[in-house]
Image 1: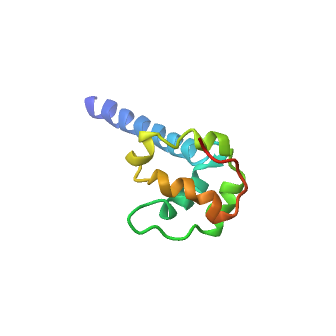
Image 2 (image 1 turned 30 degrees about the vertical axis):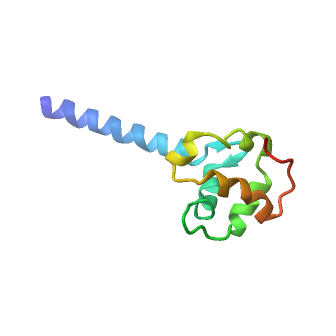
Length: 102
């Protein structure tokens, strides 16, 4: 009987993780979907950043630049392996018009 309860708990955990993953894949930050943000990561990762991809620039073109500027000094960026100086250079590299971040 204990084995049946453990199996049910495991099934519930797997289902919960699958739902969380599906929700996260559709998540948006500053009008950019997670997928778009992730396409930019190689361009904002030190010490050898790559040029931004077309997918990254397309995602950035739809982003809310004021919102993105709010992350300029966020420790969350470094925790994710993102160099904030490189991230602030992305709009210019992609040719996305924007007001400068303060």
